[in-house]
Image (cartoon, rainbow, N blue to C red; front, side, top):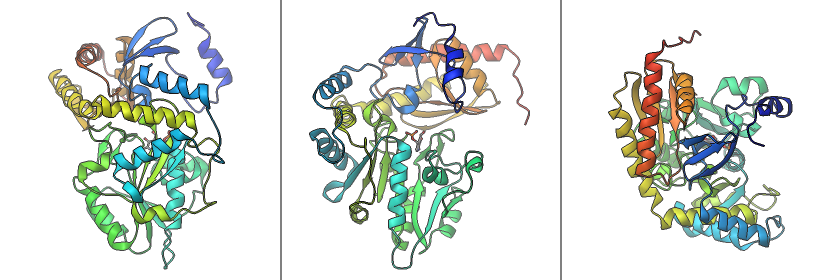
Length: 405
Ligand SMILES: Cc1ncc(COP(=O)(O)O)c(C=O)c1O
């Protein structure tokens, strides 16, 4: 249906009110571009929130999904399939989990973290470890286990009581040292807090967490749902600190838009789950795993991790070159970038950018996030700078709406 005027009414009538009514009805995409139902074209610098790693309608993904759906989309976990085996093998290789590694497939990042939560529960040790440490402002998902890990009281409070055992600490070395002892089953960390506004951890934090968890027999579980799959200029965010975790969780960019999640375990953590401990009907089905394997192969073949690193640096330089007084700075790594504003203008910037044909999203009143497809090149960078610069100029020309608490 094109030329839509009534889609918003239909959305509000029929979709559960958990999301704000969207500003656009998107129809199709190509690379880093999307078109709405009225034919307007947008540069997509959000990529479905770090999901469309190859961009829209990439021929490799089309071929993999089309081929697999014509063979078998689903067989259940009562049976194995070749794409599932191939993706598990590839994940063990690229994560460095190697021969000792194991993979559990889910359908989302939240579900991957649910599996990781259960892994932590199994790491009781002899003394019955039950404490789990996560960070304030962390985001790990919205189901009851993942929500307990998510360090945001406004998300948790309506659904109290939470699954017990999780404590949220500040991202400081002192808090980490005080929290981790022999009663801790696991520490959950995002290498960059994406949903919190692409917030960086203090340098050396992952390494310290590794040291302490190793010392006390706790698992170090890294949530790579947003930072993984090349986004930060390495396959995984943990690699920037040269550590080896006990487990990582993946989703988002893994299958380029086809729903999938994964828990990958390393070393002795691979022995914790046994038969009957966990399951999923859809998890690891041939369609999603064929998509995932094709996406990872294409990222490797086309050097997209290096592209993420180089384009990320160019993007941050282009943002700095705009010399906008509204911009306080940039954060992040590779193609996961947070832009901090000096004023609470994020929502206005998002709307102004959209008016100039650019999609970005607000992660708070004074920050926005960029997570474009890993395939962007010179044209997209130039278009971004022109459109974003025009949006900022519009805002500078109009009075800023002060947000009152
Ligand atoms: C770090 C992190 N963990 C978990 C999730 C939840 O993933 P999903 O929305 O696929 O369930 C997200 C989603 O934004 C995330 O950024």
